[in-house]
Length: 155
Image (tube, rainbow, N blue to C red):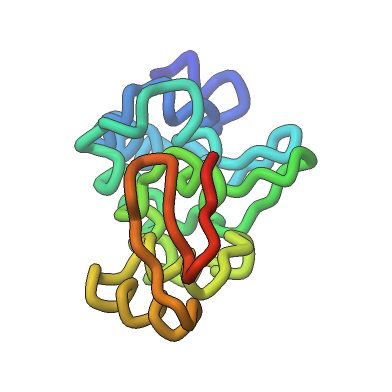
């Protein structure tokens, strides 16, 4: 830990701690800077890169800790990445909900209303929205095929 603090005093690479919020909390208590910005990347973006966050049961605890300690939620890298976009790409909608509730900028997701409902809503809300959106209705026929009204769409 002393090595981390002596090399600039940040929590850069929080994801490298395997999402262990207790280690990150110790680093923060020891004076590590969680508001760093390194090559366009910040602590939240680093925390969701470089490890398997899709199946990490500790991810929400880590994000809660970082947000509570003042981590930025709206950083966008030079590659147009944000923590919200990374989490959306891998399907961690629980983490997206947490960050949105903490004040993250929803517009960074660039979701349509239907996409937001599918990701964060209930099945009943998705059915209602799809009925409104597609006059002929929407029937899911399988993983790669759906029918919208009378026209077929296949991948």
